[in-house]
Each structure stands twice: as structure tokens, then as C-alpha cells.
Image (cartoon, one colour):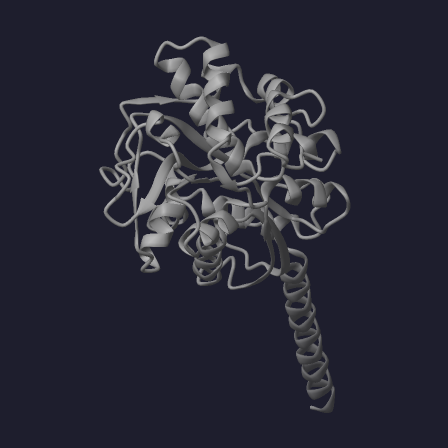
Length: 342
């Protein structure tokens, strides 16, 4: 009888040992970011983004934390001018998940081996949201600003960010230039329009969000901005209206998980979430045009003459021609009105 009890004790002990080992292994797997379907992840994700989607990402993080996979994931956030954020990551700022205003800021990370060269090889071409450039005006649009030509009214004050720091500003510039092209103007005539337009610009902050704050603070007659920024301002009770001009550009905002991410599994899971129907709906609720079809249908009007960056030659050509700080066309314009480009 004593021998039977001894064997029973040994058997129970062995079972407990195996169970404890399995439990320990499971906890360890979760801590390092298990990639199995439905596996809970944990740890921290360093999110680095341009200035305007802060509220959207905070809503996305909360929603992700309500999922079985993301409930234990935490986030460290950094927001700022797109170009500045991109350069900061290259300089060593920690980043697992990056979201910029425009593709060249992502390409900078590719050149630094911080993002895979095939970052855009998916169904959304690497993009997470869309938008368009709009005219934000005082309530009631007292200056009757509806067209690009209206921005050249004598004495009219325009607010737009600095295109040598802000991705949003570059979209604004190319929207104005492209609007002339699609109306049949020559490249020289379109560039002359930009030169005339910048003589009306009274403030150039370093990011789109700061420009919005400048405008809602009372400076200027019209703000060139992302459509989502205008919607955001209205949602916060700001006394503004906005107009989508007949000719405007399709803004496309990229995202990626970095090659040196410290928590790649959680960053990838979050990326999958923001590209899901639930994630895209949250973006739509925050004023962004979804990149997935069938979400927020009818919410966002289609401009009469909507064009994308390829219509103007694509970002590699445009960056060299317009935004090179030494020889770019916009550099000469900015220098002529005393604005720094370096």
C-alpha cells in the first residue's frame, strides 16, 4: 500500500511539473509577441507619425486594445511634421510602426535600410488613408473663396505649412500646381501661379496641425489643408467652413513596420488592424477617406477633377524639381519671400 501511495505522489508531481512548464512557456511566448492566429501579444510599440492623425491613432489604439490579440500591447507615440519625423527615425529615434504624409518620407527610411523596399507591395500600395486638399475659411466663407484663382485676391492672406518640413504643405503646393495643369495651363504658367500664391502666404508653420492652430487662432483668410483637418476642426467646434475645389489632388498617406522594430509581431498586428474594416471605419470617423472600398460610402464627395501625384510626374521627379533645398523651384520662391528652406 505504501508503494502505491509513493507512485501516486510521484505521478501527481510529474503532472504538476509539466503543467507549470506549459504555463511558463505560454507566458513567455506572449511576452515576446507570439504570431499564431489569435495569440495574445504584449510589450510596447513605438509609433511615429505625422502631425494630423494623432486623434485617429489614439482611437485605433483603444480599439486594438479591446481585441484578444492587442489587449496587452502598449504604445509610445511621437507626432510632428512628416519630413522631420522621417529624418528623426533615420537619426535613431525608436520606431516600430511609422506613418507619414507622403511616400518620399517612407522612401528615406528605405534608403537607410529601416523599411523594406517592398513596403508598398500590397493591396493598398502601402497606403493607410486618403484625403484631398481643401480651402478652410471663416464661417460663412466671407471672402467667397471657391476656386484657386480666388486665392489671388488682392490683400487675401493664405496660411499653409512650410513645404520643406511638412508633407501636408507639399500636397498643398502640388494641388495648386496640378490644378493649373488640369485646366490646360503650361508648366511655366502653373509655376507662375505658385509664385503668385506664395506672395499671399502670411504664416508657414512647420506642420499641418500647427497651421490649423494658427488659422483657428485668428490668422489669415484661408487655410490650405487636408480635408480631414477641416473635419477635425469642425468636430471640435471651431467656427470654420471648408470648400473642396473643383480641381484638387488625391492625398495618399503611407505606413510601414520598420525593419529594426523591437516588437515586430505587435507592430504587424496593429498594422493589420488599422487596415481592417474596423480600423478603416475609425479613420473614416476621424475624417480620413478609407483605402478599403465599401466603407463610409457617400460620406466623402468626389471632386470634379481629382488627380493624383502621377499626373504631375510622380514624387521622385517632383521632389527634385520642386523641393530640392538648393536647386528646387520652391526653394527659389521661398528665398524670394525670406523663408528658410534648410
